[in-house]
Image 1: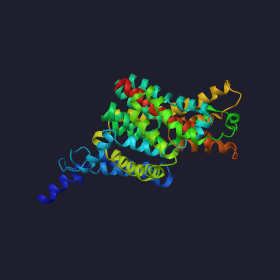
Image 2: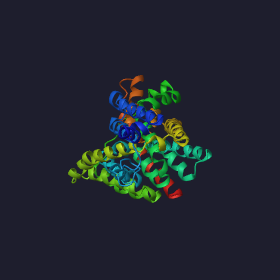
Image 3: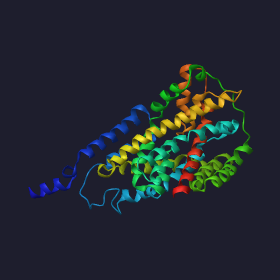
Image 4: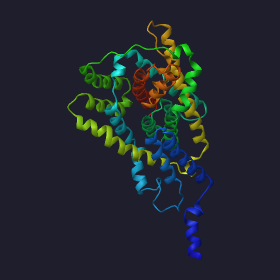
Length: 374
């Protein structure tokens, strides 16, 4: 009986808390949303199962958990804490991304820049709530709707918040189809949502090859703190566009990014141990993350409406919402909202322009914050 009692006290039953129960439910919800709703399943399912792993309690000192030095999960989590994984994911994103839609209509780049408004408004809000400048910068980057960028910046500025910020960023990325449509409809009229945009012009292969080289040098001169992220993004894109490294591009855009996404997702989820994760600061971060995402969406839509005041060739303001860098989910949402008004209005290729510009914009914003507060 004594052995049985010790076993129960030192195992999951003896160390179980209400916080663990809440987080286990949250993990199941993540898995449910990924499986049944199709909300970013490649992210939510690994993160959701990681939350389950991180919230099965055990006796301290067993070298099992993510916060116990030398455990398997701790070793894998170093890629998150040290910021190794995000640049590798950006390499894969670059190898999958076609910037032609943006290059054919360069003015749409401004929509990707305008959507970064959410980052800086949330930075101001977080600073006013008592967070340090470094913590506020890490919280603000959630508005970019770019999980790898959020993890990379947080690992440099506020590593103690990396779990809360990563979960918040990926949650709102997955909830793009829920969050963005009401904001778009609130800020636009039906007449604006019915605008049809002119077809994109073809882009030469030479320009597609030159773009990653030139864009890398320009953006990193502006924000050297983004060299790791943008360097890998544009390098991956060069592998895709140059036409002579197809094997490398295929590996980066398939096997490599899938492996890193699995490890990143499950370790980020496992970092949400209830005793460390369920804090007043985490609640504030989740709340500000939602506001940041809403600000970013609204910023892109309103800037598109502003551009229409000075332009003869009108932009459908719906695509301004795609300025957040949730690629390609946000562009799909723009297509869905536009199709509800006019089933024959195809916006997705136009929306991809601010969408991919938003990826670059959020990385530049992260570089600026890192250079300023790092």
